[in-house]
Length: 128
Image (cartoon, rainbow, N blue to C red):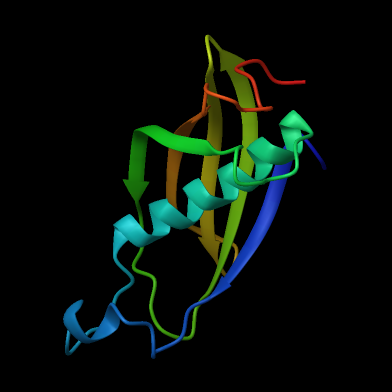
């Protein structure tokens, strides 16, 4: 639903550049990459919530993360489903809840905060 939540999908393949080193005999998607995927989905939702089309002068920055939890490894062949929900905007910080699942099972979650760029941005600090 525009402005409230976004659903994104990442097919995790063995040829991802991080797998050879993480870990060579047991490839596992790094948690930081899962969090980044959630943050990217939150950024898409921020643009939809603000009703702004991304351009060279409008951007949202990933500014904070809270309550990150990793529950199960993500491996090559998994389909990572990212569910991000808008929670609130307060004093220029937008808060989202992110949930990552594989086969309907939670593998990671976090509270993601983003902020619109304040100089020349069409996206201001309050949603809607």
